[in-house]
Length: 112
Length: 117
Image (tube, rainbow over all chains, first blue to last red; front, side):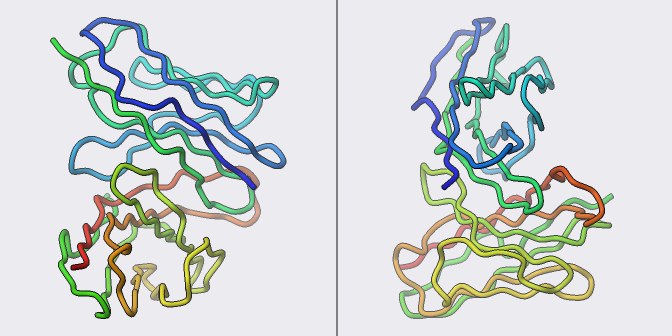
């Protein structure tokens, strides 16, 4: 079946540090890949997505590239801010059916 | 444009009781999905409704049931509550058009936090 594996957190960084959160997946076919962010007390917000191999999703300084050969979709940001502190979820979905399969989430803590 | 809303925000029930959670879709959306997010875990897919019909179900027992109404709002019902049902329940809506391939973005509501004692 389909599954997503994320690096465990929390990830603790100082402001302006470089961020990488690893995500790998197992899926049949050619899934679409997503990163969602969840701020404290809130629901999930879509951060970025990629729908085919070698696509790069980007938003708010975050980037992730769909790597089919390594089945990965790592999240990166060059310079994090305190306001980026949240839980980040990697997810996949196969086309034709909208079910999202999520990883367990990675908590990011950014200190001033 | 109104986003996805859910009610109530918080709910406390006792084991064996029944609960109904509600979700209003974003305007123009025709599909609603429900997810269960246990503490410290990622959301798990419960089921999805498309145009008032169930369109797929995750690994949840039949005591989890749902409805979608003509205005595309939705309810999640859980019977015979168990302690492990304590979680954040998330609703997500999207616009699905059968003629197109690809994946449509799901917009999530803030969730209902259910505590079962």
